[in-house]
Image (cartoon, rainbow, N blue to C red; front, side, top):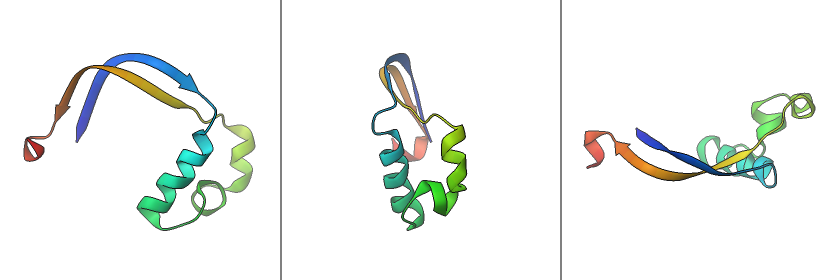
Length: 65
């Protein structure tokens, strides 16, 4: 695991759905987050954001050290 602690440097809606789609493709092989993983109509009820963190500390599991 990875634990990142710090301050939020930026919160943005721009690109959040594209990022969700890219992560969906990488980890599931499916094309879209909304429609393939979550119901497409859920997109209208949610606000996706990307949070960028300015790290103060980063901890990882011992296996990755």
